[in-house]
Image (spheres, rainbow, N blue to C red):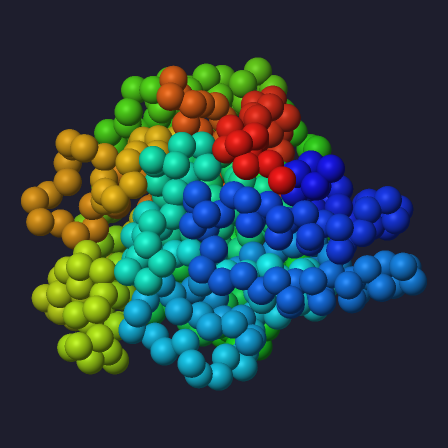
Length: 477
């Protein structure tokens, strides 16, 4: 039963706790055993707190025994990405430049809300150094691998969270997304990942990458992401850019379907190179939305490739985040991140302001686009998972020589909607001939988080993707 428990949804776990058919201690023990069996081959965790998780599970069990759960996630196992502050745990951001032997007294807003809701915090998941790229390897903990094929990357920068989620190592996972870092690994590992509207989930400390950086849920089901969003979207005074609370239950209305919705389907945004096998699977998935009654038009949103603007903002953010490090510390960093930092140094203030003007133009364009269309559907990625140890698939077209941000070019569908701050998700929609997952991206108008979740829930029903990679059978406890 242990391995079965590790794949139960959070929604199912909470119902079982209420019925007293399963206990939080059973579940946490099963998850910890699963991590012990599976993680040596994946390297999804950089920190595990066995004692803390068991103590939290025992406390949760006591509350459920009295019929007094403290919140909506009481007893549900959760992981935290190693970008996000967690009281009592070192937040090293995948970097050797951070001293672990210091006080860690504070929870970030998302961590605090999860604790208050009774979640059992299991550990911290891996990230590339300071979350700088769409992969998940770093100088501190090495390479994180994809549960569907351990020779492949799970993507990034929330790759540890995605790998853990796909492999049954926890029900709920916190990711961050500053250019696709939730949706990239979600697509590569066959899970659901939501980048909410900017500010929907409060963040602290503020990201050095500014208002392109979002915090959101990574789960195996859409309902679990909605349940998690209910908790983590609660207000926190430390984020001065946070949106006012919506006061809604995101789990309500998930069964509303897509009938009558106006969906624009853009296979390549008008400029992207997409692997044919990805394009084929996504096109078939979009047809299923039309079969459900959505009004689907194949149309590009009509904006020019914003890569240059994004790269400028991203490299300026890297410079901002790392400017306090000494030369010796920077020499310890991932060579690719060193190159991004150097590119940031070469930028002028005018470059940065011009990139932000282009960003504003793009955001206004998409505001107008969504007057006609409720949702935009695209591939989540241009590729499926490729070999670990690379910044891009072999011979991927269009990457300028010497460009350190190679990952941007094979993920052309994600970062534009960080620039615009819109909600967007990746929902698994099929597998390529090598058995690797493919994701469909759904993008909503600003603040339309509930609509994105509703449409994703409809996709989940008709796509009916098997969420258990073969690795699961090989490593069952």
